[in-house]
Length: 192
Image (cartoon, rainbow, N blue to C red; front, side, top):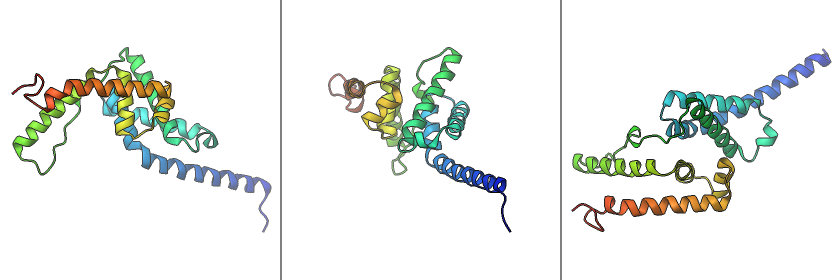
């Protein structure tokens, strides 16, 4: 039995859709959680973070795979970042998330006193990070939470690689200077 040209064309189109669907699903499995964490850190709201990430994957479905191949992570984070920025702009707020919204996860082997101290220190650290300029917070997050290279951070954020290095250096130096008394009480003006 011969297959008509129309059926063959539809069959190839369906096969392409199936391959694309599998590709998208693999990317969803790999990137959904980190993208949600990234969006939530900027938005402070899990539900809106889910919406932003859903929109990001919708744009991935509509995008030309050949243009994205080889730099999918960078593309996803760039689109997610732009979606978050749009949400914040629509709400009229471009402020960073407050540190108290981020939960501290204690080490299971620590006793109650150690867990409390660790949670307090982490709260102070997060409060200091939240006081950094938003751009510094973002490059810190992309570098240390997502493991991006300077080049990838530059492409996601739209700043030069040297500016990424400067932002990271400045943020780390600021945190180090402010954290020294917090992490080492009694030293250099810290509490005894």
